[in-house]
Image 1: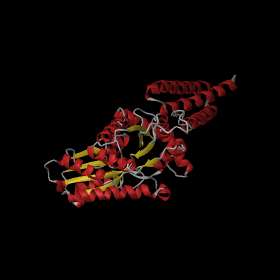
Image 2: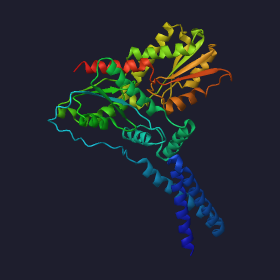
Image 3: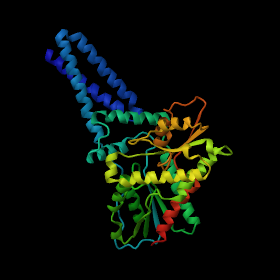
Image 4: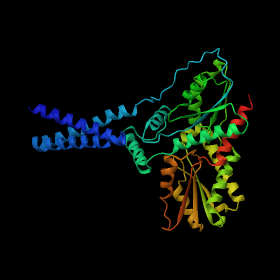
Length: 408
């Protein structure tokens, strides 16, 4: 009989950890279920240990329970963190001898972020870190990281990233049609959402595209653009007699740089620009990635520095415009906010400089980092967010696409 009690302690301990891990990582609609199951297991375990064991055996039962709680947590963490990317890819039904229908397909390719909580993007990121030997979040703590991601979604309600890019890709197609390219069809694709870029290319081929331009709506050349290019190249579009061009990211687009100037000027209005602080917050990447992808940091720095120069040309004080990083690199925004405050600025505008459309980064992460600074209660920190569909953003994207279309 006693051995059964010991087994029951182990089982309840294992399922306490198992259900707790699920509580940390499941969709918000399932949180309550796994919280209740976790509490029931912990309650049953507590009652069992208190009522059935005494002194040394009680201590040993607690140790056994903790060991199996950790085991349950660890086992289910392995299951959750090894979840594969299951986004669908359509069948390529076009024949290699099919010349197509003569139109140009533009694959609008950007980062992507699910509208509601889905950790698959970060699961893919964890695997990439592991493959490259980059230390980020220890395995045991990754479910807690995912839990924090879910909390951000619960705070902001939804990510606007997908809907904004749907709007932007539709605008791009309309602009191309109005500017003398009526045979262009734009296909939206995401690195971390549906549809994938390879799926969009397959759809374009199946629908008879005779030329393909990949519009890379990113700021820099990085592992993200490389992964998308790798997915697209796996389709081998040249085997179908279809030429393909890549626009490259937008770090050197003067048109996109000018967008930040217009946004800042609009926010200041008739005010004194020399008394306004402007913070350009970059994304940042691990130092280890700078070895393999030095372009990411170099291009992000170059892009932001050229914006600072343009701001100064537009009447902003050099000492009141500055750079910070969201993650992996220093300085962080709060430190720079306090420095600008010491300069006597009347308010601070801040941009999520490397973010193409509203996202958890621009809606939550970067504002939260800014608000960590010590500043007067009535002081104004103005979030000007991501690029979004500003007319100059759209013009910058279209310029790159048109250049590639004209190169065929």
